[in-house]
Amino acid sequence: MKQVKAYPAAITIFGAKGDLTKRKLIPALYNLFTDHHLPAAFNIYCVDFLEVDENEFRKDMLAGINEFSRSGTAEEVKWNEFAARLFYVQGDFLKKETYTALDERLKAFEKQNEQNSTRIFYFATAPRFIEIISEALYKNNLCNRDGLDRIVIEKPFGTDLESAKKLNRFLGKRFSEKQIYRIDHYLGKEAVQNIMAFRFANYVFEPLWNRKYIDHIQISVTEQVGVGKRGGYYDSSGALRDMIQNHLLQLLCIVGMECPKAYKSEVIRDAKTKVMKSVKAYTTPQVFKNVVRGQYTAGSINNMPRPAYRKEEQVQSGSNTETFVAAKLFIDNERWKGVPFFMRTGKSLPAQSSVIVVQFKDTPHKIFKDDIVPNRLIISIQPELEISLLFESKVPGLQMKLKPVEMDFTYKESYTETIPEAYEALLLDVLHGDATLFMRADQIEAAWKVVMPIIEAWEKYPEKELHMYKAGSCGPTASGALLKPFAKEWYELPFTKTEKAIPNLKSL
Ligand code: BG6
Image (cartoon, rainbow, N blue to C red):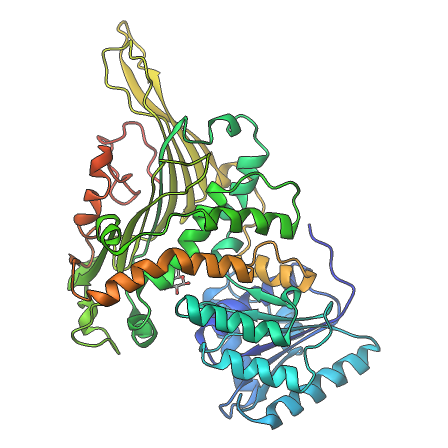
């Protein structure tokens, strides 16, 4: 368990009235508090421009905890203690008064504790406010102590390589890299953090983890949700920017990175950045051969009708924005040369599921009559947290008949510990000044470099090869074609899996 930090913590959240604050940040901070991970002295200042009564704001946050927290309904006594440290600061992000008021609050808190505090400034705002708030924090000297003051930036970090570089430069002039925490919440997920433990604490897999034994890797992040109320943001983003540029490429880095020299933030981030920089960039014709985009049309999910993407709130009626992407990528280095990394993600699919499948090569020498299913390592990140290994086994009986079976590790069966939410892990790391699970400037730029040729090709040919798929289906069939030259298929996700396809599978 991480140590409770001695310094008091002053946590400021810009964007108090946003969804992220209510659904994720406050429930995460509340759980950290009840699990005794926060320092004894802490205050949370939630800033937004609306006039809101502080008690009403607290009630709204309590409703957020009751609805979204992993720990369920808040306990009255604990909540009252927590609520006494939760404040609403009304203020316009554009006005100096907001920062003056905040400065007074922070100074008063530090005076009351008779010592400095770790100051965290969390930008849970629309991206357009990042520079504005940063500049104000800088000019008003609110965040200038290198070792104590930190800013936390949500994605999207830029909208392309140029804007990400510009933002990095802008922030770099005002804060040290050590003070900047760029969030990708996938990195805080328990099962994602476990991939490093799995790879680097189990020597048995290391000799196999390369092009000699691995045939290909699949990374799938499917979502049942549509764009909901986020149409305005999503329509100018799309699945490539929203999911591939960050979450899926981060997963690729963890699976593909070399073993770092030590479990140290910068060493790990170096290793991840190195592999990101080795992802092969495509030319425009290569983009259309190796990347498939799709958009959902009207359909139904769980017997509930789902409108076509183009009919969703705040989405342009003729929009060509992709709600599904499948891509085949290669890492140009000695370990991975020639091994395809297939990734796919989409909205309005039959279920939510994030799975990494490492498919090993066929046995070179076949001595059995039965077809042999190659070994597969399946890392399930959500909804279930599991790792399983698929291998062939003799069916009991008088004949030599084979059938694939699975060896499973499930969190449910192996641990009684609570699984923290990604935001709990990440917020605690920010408090501890541990940037291991955050993206560094160079890594984020390297990720943009991977997706830029795709963005550019699609911008040049906006209608070319936009494959429609029905909401509730498994995405455009064209995505299957990506794997065909390799005579492979997408791994059947839990929601499409049948007993027949992979015998003896436990239902996930
Ligand atoms: C966010 C995306 O970063 O991740 C959303 O902006 C997406 O569009 C979400 O729904 C998925 O996260 P999770 O944790 O639900 O898989």
